[in-house]
Length: 227
Image (cartoon, rainbow, N blue to C red; front, side):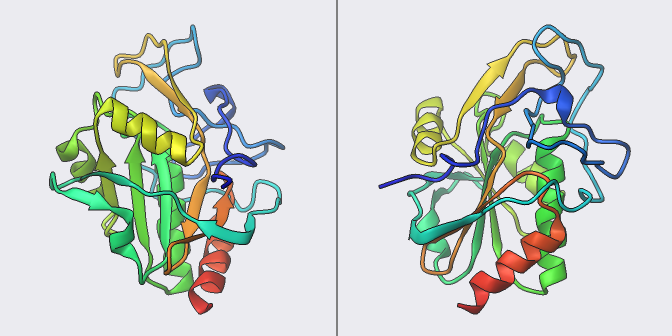
């Protein structure tokens, strides 16, 4: 069975993705995003997570997002922000957005999570958002809960051991790597940037590229929820 992320998820350098105050201005032809304080060998003065109130300018290009035909979403068995075991199948009955990132990400992750919140609001539909850390060494359950609570949108933050994280990311074809950084915030992480939309019966329907914008997110969610 093919897994998500093979067609669109990619590992790319940080300098090409910028958050300018509140709005991210997207002018790149190719999706670029590694959440980190600096590119390898660079420095950053970022001291902590940057939370983005607004969203990307839609859209950063146009590309195919659909899985045709849909396919079963890989399992996720991790730990939620309350320290309880989590099973992705527990969310059957509702559309689910799945995104892999980390809480120290200064740009791409908060922008993506803000886009999802805006897209759901625009669609006027309920959906779940599962945010899986690829940095379990720093993102324990408490950190994930604190981070996801900021968005006030019912997001579910998940963590696990290094082995569990690697196994889960591999099942979803997510690539990630630790990057050297002189930031006071510590090391950075590069990782795949797609968001995966799973329908109410657990089928993968779309992989949504970074910078797609709230309008496209709302459109795809509306289509999936109406099936």
